[in-house]
Amino acid sequence: MTNRRVIIDTDPGLDDALAILHALNCGRFEVLGLTTMAGNIGIDNTTRNAGRLLAAMGRSDIPVITGAAGPLVRSVIDISDIHGSDGLHGLALPEPQTAPLDDAIAWMADLLLAEPAGSVDIFALGPLTNIAGLITQHPKAAARIGQIIAMGGAVDEPGNIGARSEFNFATDPEAADIVFRAGPDLTLVPLDVTRKVRADATWMNNLRGTTAGTIAADVIALYFGDGRQSRPLHDPCVMLLALDPSLFGVEERYLAVDLGDDGDAGALKPARTGTALLKVAMQVNAEGALDLLAKGLTRA
Ligand code: BDR
Ligand code: CA
Image (cartoon, rainbow, N blue to C red; front, side, top):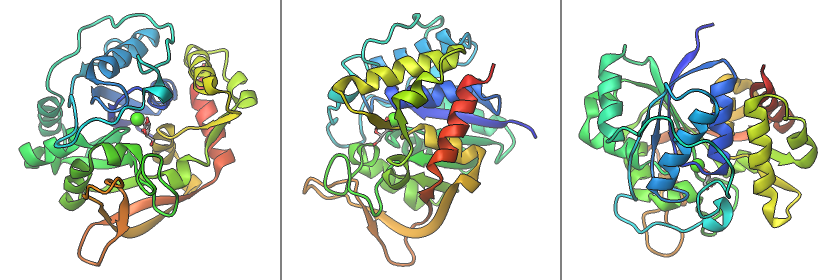
């Protein structure tokens, strides 16, 4: 089987870091670049963290490309209590070996136009600002994306920002709306499944041994910093769905994004036929997902 060629659009971030480590180590993806956005902790931190993770993995040949410094129209949401003031809670990593490139949107457009149509997928691990920019500024390039798998939203599950809104879509609801309406091959991985795929101390300790697994265990230990016994592995679920869709129950739903100002912007609402029909992961075999994630992180 040939490896999937992917752009990882990301804001590392603890769970982004786990997802990136898995993608680099599992041997099943050809990672073409890490495009960044401010998301979890500001564009300078997320971009630096992307480069630091690549350096730690000996993969500084993969470019990091700086993307959106903030949402399309709204103010940033501060969640530094979760990810720490540097985005990785002080995790010791080498500094980036190469400087980041500028302009994630232009870089994605050039790549998509240069490669065969449909041959490059995007794993979207943060607010959809960069992808919305690609769609509006370079529609011909955007039409050549293979598929987008995006962590975001909450369908039947409570939100983690507002009562029904999840961080990635709450941060940039207008971007999510643009992406939904454009009608790409889009699969959402919402809180409904990511909250069920949880790391506990035993699972974490079994990761140590490989470089990726040891860094991942260190990341999860920091994620436990507030004394909780388990933490959800949101972003890695994107890679797991790409690798083994049979672990997930994917349904088709008509959904729209709340664009209001009542504190629940970014929430997903059932929508009438004729709006965006999305594929949404609504069930997960959590044990199987954790096994697949551990296997990818510990592959020697
Ligand atoms: C999402 O928000 C971010 O904090 C995580 O990295 C993940 O992408 C979960 O709501
Ligand atoms: Ca993220």
